[in-house]
Length: 258
Image (cartoon, rainbow, N blue to C red; front, side, top):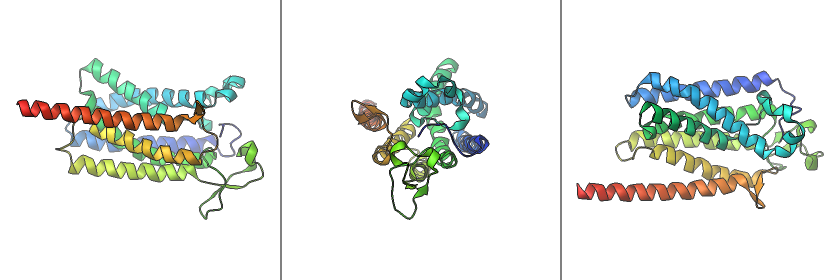
């Protein structure tokens, strides 16, 4: 779904995104205090994470919809009309954390674990902005929870069909579940988790849900005839499993030697 011809006020989209950011930051604030880290650092790094994440999110979306933006370059900067790719946001924000912590000589893994507490909850809230912009829906369906899409926002092949899968809702619920899993894992398994493993758990779980949601998405970005988001999801999950296994084996060997 492109980010033009939306029927709803752009202020609604922006308000929901702002609310998602504030609540996500609040959760990170509580986690920073729980881990006895410097709150000032949180607000410093949050500024750069938001900028880098926004750039990354928009870049991912523009590449996804390049056929449209190539003909309408002025719309690239119309952020209020929607169009933010979460994978771009995640890796843009992660890059900002890495650069900031490296420059300030802080522990990147600790701060990635702190940041990840607010991310899925923010996503769960932020996905409702897609509802008002009618930009994240799936294939047609007759299910009781199907969402009505105005004709102006339908894909050409579905112009005579009114009800579709509410993908924004599926992803919102999944993100909320991921947040709860990470929240309780961070507290009940705090002594058993290695630094950085909360972030690994988050990105793996999110990618798992995204992999299955993509099956219901009609206008996917494809690489080599396969959905790009699914390829990215599989790559991330496999990479996370390898990293976790290698780190766990290494730490086990170190502990044995000690």
